[in-house]
Image (cartoon, rainbow, N blue to C red; front, side, top):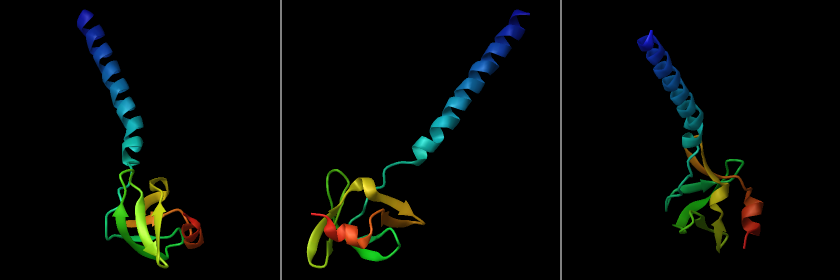
Length: 97
């Protein structure tokens, strides 16, 4: 009887551990995107903006667009269908300092 109780408790802890890992798996899948120098950056609508000129320490991407150096915040950058994409439109990018 004692060994049955031990088996039940072991299975219960194993299942709880598995459930916790399953819940944290999506969090691991949403890792920060790191912009790479030279990689084309697309606008939210898929339009090409410019290749990444430089990546800052905080992960923001700098591009040269219309003769102006613009820093795209890292929080707006993601991978969409394998392409480096910002959630900003071209007009929003041009309005950045």
